[in-house]
Image (cartoon, rainbow, N blue to C red):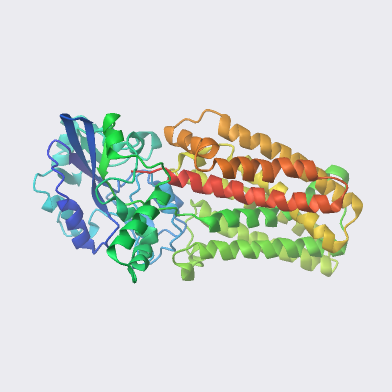
Length: 535
């Protein structure tokens, strides 16, 4: 069996009955939707038309949300329905990043993800989904697409249909008759500040509590003013009037689901930095041994191990803080879904911490053979810890910019930079040998050169999709241009290259600037792709 939907745009009148029925059936909170009707206006007066498109979970055959979920909260039933168990959900929001169709949201009441589940509880007792029952025009058709006698199978056989974003390879099971690209393709229309009820995006979904806080002690005029101001900042685009859009004769959206805002914020950027330091300070001594046979004394081994564990602990704290259900963080280890790189990363971090601890203990008790084995295993695990986030980002199919094959090199290079910078700063407190300081200075210099070249390649090569190109434009010449050119390039790379020298104080300043630059870079790389609308 394979259940699916057909949306017949020849019949849809944009009445929103499906949205209302869905909200009633599932008690969906205000400001978030499991199914909604997107409205786009096309043409120039008097030759205009309005396009309605019912949008929802596509119940994909190859569902990226199921693959990325670290705790099996999302799963595919035998009948093809992608269902959800919110008792398992940890609120990591990775499913929302993986879905190319913006179908998931964080429920402001339960703090877990939610989405259309095809009204599975109704299907199990022989009923149709609530949206199908309530549609006055029979514009929503559901059923088993593998049953040749079903209405949906017969429609698929004789009508020309289209799906949203077929290039993602998810095999979506929601089909559109007379589907219009202006409505189905997010980049065909801008998410502007002026359309029907657009101020909803100021405080919904992941930011649902914002609206409630705004209303406390505020009059209507102040509230509207703040909503408008906040909407502009979330939209991230220059304000354009309706008249300008009409003059340009562009298709424009007049109703849409509210913007969910930035799902992975500063905590994720900071955790990438702390993780890079933790892994990097273990990788650097190994590189030193291979490059010039540098051997550390016991005191430095303790110092390096302690530094790695401190930043690994910080990584764990930041990861837990980013969860909307932090009390369930152990589910990643106790109920793992092994296709998810979030689950694999959780185990990698745990094993890495255990191996570093084992190495320190073996060094203390002078178990030389055990210390050597533990150190080599720690280096291997440090490499995985340094780069696994690149594979996690690759599973987030909704964000095209994260699909870059250079992301692994990006993460590994930042670990080498962060490790050598942290060790240079640490060397001040540990009275490190001069040769060790010089080695770290040289390693930071060369890794910074490589990082600078790599970043320039990432923003200058031709990207395969319009969404990725838009992100690059945003970074290089849009809202992130100052952060990128001044923060990431100048402060994080060029100035450290000039400051690294035999004067230790200048090298310390260069190291601090390098770490700041890594954080700014990761903040841009994490945040900018999330500003591209998925619907």
